[in-house]
Length: 335
Length: 280
Image (cartoon, rainbow over all chains, first blue to last red):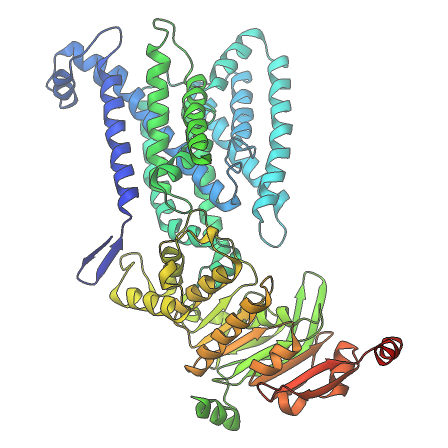
């Protein structure tokens, strides 16, 4: 399907378009459900009024102050994990090349734990996570570098670094005092509870810069999936594109981990699910972002309501929901 | 179009050339002091034994490998100084191996060849559509348009990759061992297609393994050994038993190819086998 307006033209795959619209719809349903339900039910019309600042004071407090920032943070963090995963799976041409496998998330955890043990504030923990993620990415990149970076080398080196960091993290937890260890443990499973606008806004600002960067390299990245020579012969400056993509991917993973802790599985599953849903060849950054957002907000909703009043950490649910869905899709594909 | 090729060789014009090339991977130097010119409108074939540097030379000409010294020139400019998309509109490459994206259709893969002609806001012009249709027609893959590339045979798949390179609409097309991994009928099919593309006016440059195929299809042959060009020119003029012996270490007889009249290399029987044949 081609849309042409004067000298401009865009190509759209109907299947991908429908899939993305479906994801947006799902996102709306989940968000409204998360805003409306809970200990205090806010009817849907009241939500709309509260969002536009015309609701009752109670509804406004619950929706705008308590629930909305949590939903928005979940949505943004999910999208960031989804895009980050898609970038690294595309660059490594390997589904296991997602940031939770190649050490970036573990590195962010190390940074976070160090900050917890050092008695840091929430902001410092977030900063520690971001720094840990970036240092790890530099380390993996440097170790894997040999005349440019080959995908499989990045995955292998990343898995090695990941194992090392997991060990470091365990060691740090055993050395920490019991209170710090409990705080760090809670942060490590990944959670969106108690997230306010001061969490959501920095993530939103980071995404406002990083997502356009990703969009700019999406097309050349698809070409690089066919091999460096094939891409280069099409006039793509492979190393430059890769540098931009890696930078954006690392920062997305770092920012997301800083905001919600190392939520597992979204970065791995979202791009795979998005690709199968859209049936498009290669990386699909937009659909991966939407899928990540749906996965994380849905998982967070389930984490809050499933065993209410007991609250589960969202990380437990992302693995359960994403994993089940992926297994089902793979099973269907095999037939 | 054959006359264009002839006049180009007579005037010696070459849009693509390299001079004083030292080619190396890391510390391993493959070739030094190479000087090469690809005659315009020729079907140039580069040949030589394994590890002689023929693919390396092709990669340097296609700006995949930056020469340690010297430079590759395209239309009088150093190729690495030109904007890379600009080069991609003049010079195409079919790499030795490319990765087929999962679940991509033939039409979508061929369409990717239009990348150098597209911009973010102009992703699919009428010209793109026409070029893709023409490339698929020329390579006879139009009927496969909606098939998944992964499910095709090796020969079909190679035709699809060629279609993608054709959709790029470059006057010069380089092919790195386009017949490797194909069975003999598909090898001939691909080479016939290359010959058609050459006759339609393109400059074709290919690295091949089979000397007889090279002699049959090349209008200009570059023979390499151990990183050096030992002979170049019309195959009928340069391919001799002495050349084959010095380059490939093979004793042979050369007869005219009964089909094309081009040189046909017939390896000598080893002495002991000759006696067996005679007594049989």
